[in-house]
Each structure stands twice: as structure tokens, then as C-alpha cells.
Image (tube, rainbow over all chains, first blue to last red; front, side, top):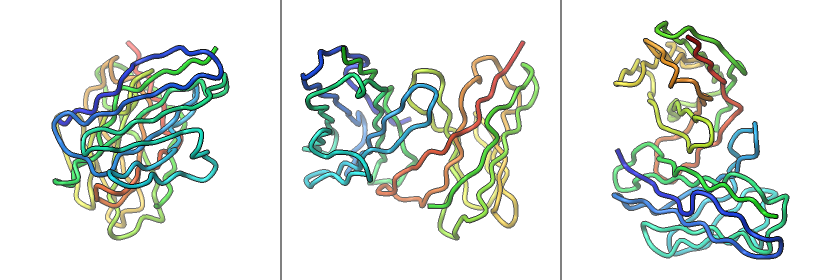
Length: 116
Length: 111
């Protein structure tokens, strides 16, 4: 099946620094990718929809200046957590659908961010 | 997108069938039923999806009621590795359509 890869799998950073998470579709093109955040024992919460070549669409309550999304190619979307704080510590997950074939969505393995 | 309702948790004995229900009474005609599962600390894994006919693949079977207001995911012979949170999601079938996750059902398969 189609593969979506996230990097890094886990990251620890200091408060005030920025962290970039990459999401790649390895064997298909994705015009649209999605970013989720998941806190312990909770469900996935959609943060934003990443659109290739245009601005991302953020869900209500998600700060676009804090969570910068760039979707520069049909196989890569990045999420940058700027000026990270301990409350940003979470499990970040991306997903993508093969827009050329209208398949189900595939998810990355997730990135565990810990801000100390 | 239509909302779904699932029981918070279920138990199943290893080797037995696990039947996970989902209510989606507000589903519209062009919305599919998707099932994903999430094993601890991993990204969600696609299981199966359907529109109105029952579906079966190597992982599971999906039974959708005739009025499409509910469905059941069946794992025919549950194993310990099937312990996970199972999410039932209703969404239109298009690459641009986002998936909104509910609270899911935590399935515990025991020896």
C-alpha cells in the first residue's frame, strides 16, 4: 500500500526554539495533506489542511503563526512549531491521499515532540 | 461531515470474532464509512471502507445497515496484535476531504 513517511519520529527541543517536522508521500502525489495533533489518551485533532502551492487552511483555534505549514511539492509538506513551549509537547501526525486515484487516506508514523 | 458514535471500550477473547459497532445516523448519500485503527504510539492504519454494500478484505469485514445509519466492523479471529483504538469515520470519497476523528473504541484482546 501507499506509504507516508514522517521525520523525525521523535524530537526533544528547548523552550523557545523551533522544530520542523517533515511529511512525505513516498510512492504517490498528494495535492492535499493533513496535520493532526494528539495528546495522551485523546483522539486525533485536525490542525490544518496543507495545500500544494497555496496557503494552508487552519482549523478553528489553531494559531497559523505558531504552526507554520509549507507544502512546496506534491510529495512533501512540513510543519514548523515556532517558539515551542512545553504545552506544545504532543504527538503530531500527518496524512495524505493519492489525489490522482482518490484512495483512502494514509498516515505517517507520527512525531513525538517533547519541549523541555 | 456526519458525526459517529462508538462505545468507548470493548473486550474480546483471542481467536474470537470482534464486532465493533458504529452509529452514523446523519450520514448523507455521498459519504462513505471508513474504519481506521491506531496501535499505541503509531499513526492510524486504514482497515476498510464502504458506501452501502458490505465489504471484506484481508483484515476485516464491514457490515452496513440498509438505511446506512449504522455499521459494524468485524475482525473474524482477533489476535493480541489487534488491541488498538478503532475509529469509525464518515467522509466523502475525495482526496481533498479531511477525516475528522471521534473518540473511537478501545478494543482489548485478551488471551
